[in-house]
Image (cartoon, rainbow, N blue to C red; front, side, top):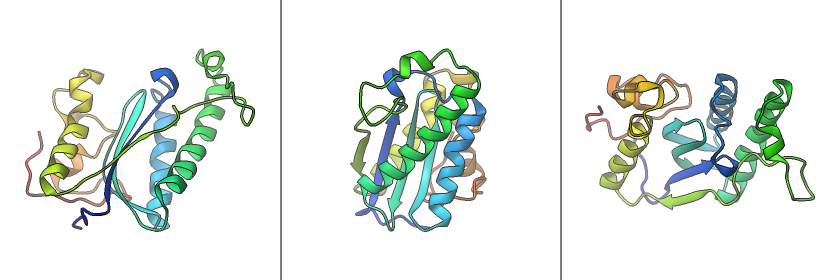
Length: 177
């Protein structure tokens, strides 16, 4: 599926104070489950992603949601699930997640995630490469190349096979490392 570049967005959300709240497989799987739900229900199209220990990057088109609605749905839902998991496991991070806001007890995500439009295929390729090399640059799990990291779309692009149900591959002419 080819992206319509006038609608394609690069999105980054960061855990509060860059804490590694997404280190657990459980919390990473909550993110994947939510992306799958949003995709299957025609809320968005996901072209690339990576889930790092303290942040996520997505390249997506919004279909039936605007940016604010996507943020509220995705970040609110995943925060609730991940916080419940952190509470159940008595995480050492919980005391640092206490919210100063009156509308919640805990804060999981930093406010104001980053959004930018992707203007063309060249920009799309650059952003996909940035996402796929993120675990390598950070030395996460001793990744030698992007495809070694499971919680990313990199292996799907290398093999030209969507290993995640929600993933819509684009820019397949580019060789990923």
